Image (cartoon, rainbow, N blue to C red; front, side, top):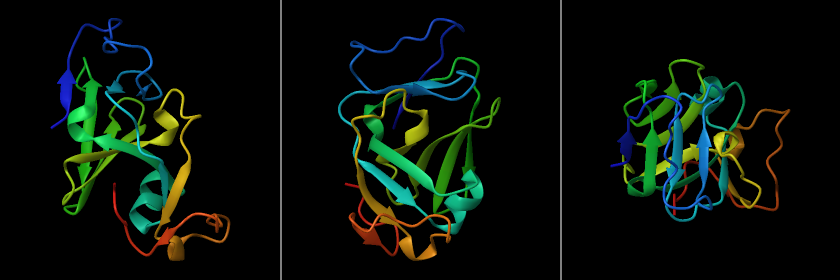
Length: 151
């Protein structure tokens, strides 16, 4: 289970070092840090990710117990589809997280909310066959017909 820290606005502890991956939503009501490394980025073109994001999703991820969420005003909400859930900010609407119901020990983090994702590489494409014509999946990375492996 990830750890939620609720502290006064303006004081957001970022953990023991500044080198760990950190990020936040657009309005910064929710921030997070990760102990350890993030996995590479996966693109998902499934209909649920497309409709919830307005396009395809690009996400990294980590073991759930390595993730600390700072949410002092309790703005994190989860939209649950039964087989997966999307975590978003109730204030600005930013999508931050994704969890598969059968992989709750892992949390995917939207690549765009990571403060510095410059070291992350594209590792694969989920639901490549559902990609829309304006989004051509990179042929140089593995394509999966579903969610593939998270590790």
